[in-house]
Image (cartoon, rainbow, N blue to C red; front, side, top):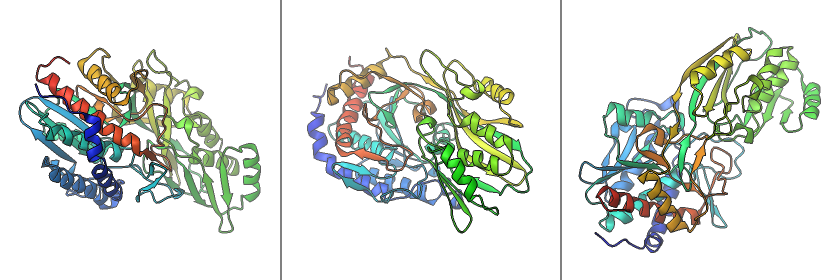
Length: 460
């Protein structure tokens, strides 16, 4: 049995190279671009460039590369039937116009990097990759095969991993983890679904609009060109609702400014689209717009009896990230997250019965994840985190966010957000502490090493 390396020492030797690689990766705008989607780049040119970059980096670090029909980039090393997988993603959520720094040019201040993707999920992916390089260079990938998969569609439904496992027929791992959540690790995830609620308005006065690019991010701002002068009404509305900001300028543009946030906890944000609907309901005497606001503004489903709970999870969530009015129908796409004790079908029936929508249609989603706390995978990952971080207090978590772990088998989410840190994923000013990035290289190296040792029959 090989001697276990000093992973803290080894991580210090690679951290500068790793950080430089991350900076180059972040400079590639990998937001899904429908306009450039094709067979050769199924998620758009930007995502494709990100997957290209990962392929070249992996090759330089000594890994074999499979481009996976341009849905993913797989970096692998080792031989054998036993598999360890790491799932990261190259795509990022869209950015707003209110970032204080360039979201695609990493800014480092006082040991903290600010950029889109530094925390979700380019930083964690690169940290895990360099952790894997340490294990590889010390002969730790022996008797099994390690695969590091960077997907291109995690933020929009994980079509990348679906293609990887179901179209390419790649085998599932014996052990797997995704560095796309929190430490010490995630053992349970809510079910995540999207439904479309349709309201027949057929209003000639209400202007047409279309907002949002992703269902899993609270609408941070909306713009609408008005034919009517609503300045006085807006002033009165804002006096009654000081939590929202809005302006009406000389060009008759109505601008609502809320706060974007991750769709798993919409109550942490302020949905500009919902407030706009509420305001327009008064302008055009459309009570249904007030009702939509009432139903979804809190994000917890309480207004229509959708606030399901369980012993594992203390809430459900409903995030509206996309809405459109075409002159006849208003449609809103709702990102719904549920505890393990309620099905999507039951939640949809409840929404149909207790909201004022004319129709509610389930568009798709995935069931939640519950992993045994006494399993070898959980035990080994928890010990790697504890040994390298020194944190012996934090416990495995159950979360509302969804990770790649649910798209595989024998897998959980593992870092790299540390306890009591909110990296503002999906928000303006997303950040990553450089020390956390460096510490995670050692944590991931330790985890890969000991998972491999367990696969080879060594008692961990």
